[in-house]
Length: 229
Image (cartoon, rainbow, N blue to C red; front, top):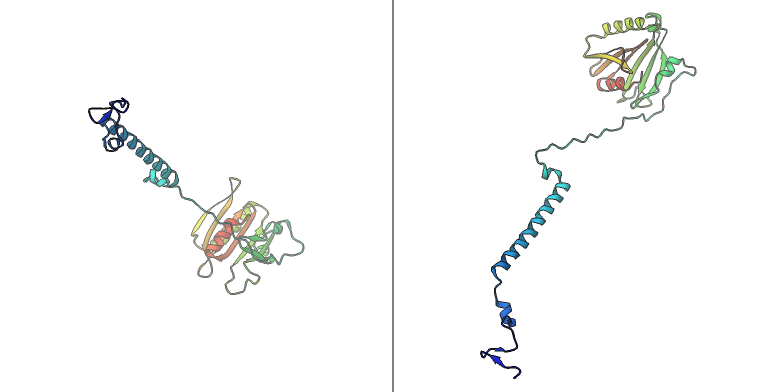
């Protein structure tokens, strides 16, 4: 008869593997199933750890290489430029005077006049005195000023003798070296103490040209380095 139970508890049409809802809820999984689940969970956790480590290493390189020094980043500021227009040039200039720049760093030419002692006493073909300043009035309080003497001689030997005379009068150099042009030595330079505290004098020769700049110590050395002649 349909619906007959065997053993007083299970209908005859149900298989031996049938479990009631209560039995399915409360039965414990086998040991093989537990091991399999643990392997799946462990594998997933390991995958998460690997992904986190890779992302962290890419976003924060020091995490993966704690002892490896990171390269230093050097930021170079652009060179300063003048805030005033050059002034004081004569209407008609020689080729030598025209080669002397209107501006160097934040300084602009404010005055130009012949430097007669080098012409009259030291046999220069021509010589000039130029005043470079960072404002319209070089005499103003706080103005940065460099005064440049520039002369040209007939040959490099005469220019070398003039350099020697200037250095003999300037005193013991605090720094000196070669002046190079396109990898070739064109003369020498020397830095000596200036006439006032906190000032320096840079004197150098470039072929037949001799130049001498006087001004605040740090500024005049930068002026010499940036000067194109």
